[in-house]
Each structure stands twice: as structure tokens, then as C-alpha cells.
Image (cartoon, rainbow, N blue to C red; front, side):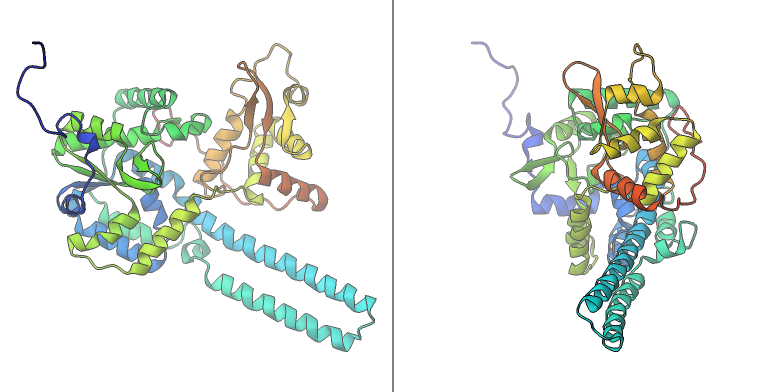
Length: 441
């Protein structure tokens, strides 16, 4: 009778991706495997409390030379660091501005009320003083909780960076040569198109203006495979990315790495792949004889929850984008303003009229100037990383965009601008060019 040649095998030999890691497996991996840290873990050190940051760095230090950072991770860290620092300061500034505006409105309402019911000035003024004192106390607390890094500015003292410099010395991968980099980028973007992990859930980055397009996650993966093959060790990837193109999830539970990635890793390296989130790393710190505070685990969860909330455009970011579009001679600024006046949508014909395009002109690549400028402003810390694209094409069958939309918050920002005049623009540097091989020039 026909059949497969050779001896029979066990349940997992041909299905290694189906093996769920046990508690013992994970603890042992943390003691022996290469631990790869993703960019979001490094960047979130700026979002954690000081004690959480200290605990997480303490665990990472015990890993010694088993700690490793792919070159693409380092690139993304430097690309987004100022944006993360800046966004922390922007949130404080926005809160203080909102408090100030609400105080002004409350005082005005008290004044109107006092006039309407003939309240004497000597009775009205103490109410205003009490109200102002309450707002001042809240504002003082907000200022006191402002991150020191944000208060000092991007060029100020950075204790996180100082610790990372020591911790990662000799533990960051070298860049790929230009030919290999271009080949990996092509494969990464092809995987996105085929919806193959990792990174296909970041398809919107294809028009982001980044040199690698949507292939950033694949570059991290490719460089990790190369290093794992060189070392001949199991690998733990520690990431705050919780999407299914990295994880095997069932009913909201994180079971392990995406099965296709586990299969690819086993075939390429002959070793086992593990995945952990930053909170998992802290919870298992005892495996490497490190004691951490349970409050640090809670703080990591807080930041993870915040990451699920989509970042929004700030007024300073919107006006910086418009300023650069105008300075470069693009009509996109007026397209965005027109969309804001029309509930966030501008149709194709209006775009042609604003830009003076001939009827036979295609709109392919129309969003690239705003995407490129947005990416540069993110590197400068003016615009938060992960905001919705300034201009998004709308398709209704076929390949031609019938309209473009802008983020909802832009509508409100530009409506207020029309009522009260443009807000002051932030001081931003000239836009930084990007070379073809993916390195910042």
C-alpha cells in the first residue's frame, strides 16, 4: 500500500506552530533565549512613570548580551522619539488651554447671571475669586504632573536616553546593505498586498512618505530571522503591538506568536519563537531574579489602553502642515480648508478647480505631499505618531478617487480658526529629506 516513507512522528513534529507555550517554557525562554525589543517598547519608556521605566529597564539589564535590537527598531525609535516627547508636553498644554478657556466662559456666565438677577458687585466678586482659585489649583496640579522631559524640551536632559545608550551599547543590529534593504522592502510591501504577516495591518503606511512604506514590521522580522540564524537560539519578541499580524489570538486571549510566523521561524532557524508584551516581561521578572512593583504592571496596562485610542491632530500640528504646504507651493492647504468647510469632504471636481488641473490629469499620488510633510513633522515632535492621514482618498468602484476626506478633529480646528483667527504656529525646522536607501539625510 502507498503511504509516506519513514518512521511515524509525534503530534507536534509537523505542526510546531500549534504548540502553546507553557508557563515553564516562557520562564525558561526568558532565561536562555535572545530577547528582541520592539520600537514601541523603547518609546513607551517615555510614557511610563519613573518607577515603571526603572523596573522595565532593570529586567532588560539582566538579559545581558541576549538583549538585541534590530536596526529597523533603532531607526523607528529615533524617527519617533521627539514626537513621543513632544506629544506628552502638547497634552499638558492643551489641558491648560482648555482650563483657561473654561474659566473665562464660567466667569462670563457668572457676570451675566449677576446682571440678570441684580447681584451686587461685593457678592459677585467673591464667587469669581473662589472659582478662579479652584481653576488655578487644578492648573497648578496639571503643571506639576507635566513630564520633566516635555518641560525641558527635546534638547534637554534625557535620563531615558542616557540609560538606553549604556544598555544597548553593542546590542543594536547593523543596517542591511542597500541592495538587501531594497529587496527586503519589496518583499515586505508585497506581503502587505498579500495580507501575509507581519505588518499587513499597517497597510495605510504605504502612502506615509516613509522610505520603507508599509514594510517596517517586515524589516524588523527579516533582521530578527537573520540574527536568530546566526545565534542559533530561541527568540522572544517583546512588543506592544497587539495586532493579529504578530499574535495568535483567540477570543481576546494572546496565545502566542502568529502561527504563520512561528512556522516560518522554525523553518528558517530550526528554533522556537516566543512573544511577550511589556507587561508579560514584568510579570515574569522573577524568572531572571528581578523584583518589580505590581504598580508598574498596572502602568504598562494603562499605556497599552491609551495606545488603542487613535492619536489626534493638535491645532499646532494642523497649522504647521498647512504652512509647509503653502511654503512648498502646494494647493493642498486650500483643499484641506475647503474640506473643513464642507463637513470634512472635498469632491474630485473641486480638487481640480482648486489646483487648476487639466481634465486629463490623474490624481494618483495626490496625497503624497501632505503624507511626506506629516511624517517629517512627526519626526520633529510637532505631530503625534499614528494620527489619521491629512487627506484620505474615497473610492466608489474603479481606481479613481471620487473625493478626499480629512480627520474630524481638523474640521473643528479649522472652524475655530475661521472664527477667531489662526493659532500661532510652532517653531519647526525645515523638513528633513530622506535618502533612497531609507537612511535619514
